Length: 359
Image (tube, rainbow, N blue to C red; front, side):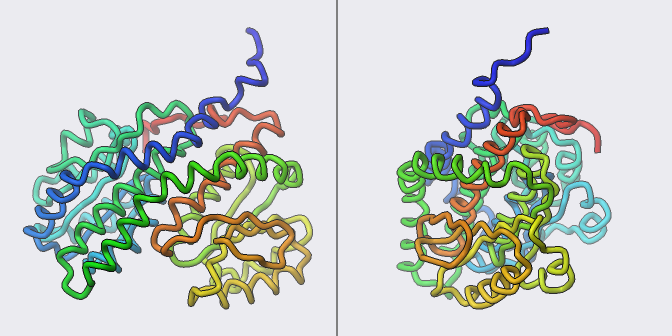
């Protein structure tokens, strides 16, 4: 068997990372479907919204609950579909809304979660004829096209974009919020495709240069807080899948409660740092000062601001709830380039498949 040419390794992963601006734009542009779904949800008056999924789909759901809780003001939580039968099934009832997230619409645990017809359900999937879509009451389509890399990139951000757009539409029924605030939030969301398209090339080159510093890293801690905690979880997954780095995600304040003792000169710290105007900034920055004393290498991802860390990647400044849509981009590139340097194929990580058929 001929060995795969070096320039072909990871070509789908790279292509799909760079398709994300277009995918996000297509996914959020159909105002009609979001208004229709929001109206149906408002008519239901759900007491609780439950999001469920596996892997990156779970992480996308986790990133989205901040929007649903803050904007829609409907109590919302997320659970792994594998744990759904044990945590949620005993309490599910008619006045709940279940949002099931699966790129393929075939993940068995996610499909099983919506089998009960007693609860209203929405399928968030790229395949409108999939088993998940057929089981659910409604479908929120992801206009991603086929994703061929096993590593989810464009489907992950499409899931967040779709759920964010839905949360903003639900916010229209929340009388505590001004229409101008929601308009500004939606405008910021719609600008993300163009803003990310503009930074892709310089971001790619910057991360490519940085990746050689982390070629031999074996352990990494990914730190974030608020919506960036969800990004940290997805970042850790990408580094495990693609680069085979033992990466763990922590809410930044929780890192003080034990794990900080493991930070040393052999450990990579990837920190997602909020803007200085954020109420979260002081907590994260003081933690990183302590980490620096442990001689760990810190790679910071932050909105456009200068900070005193080893390496710094500057991203567009957005409303905090939207930050997961852009802050994952440099980490996807990082996982890709480290994988290539190590001779791994991020399109087909060892032992992984695109759809997990058994759970």
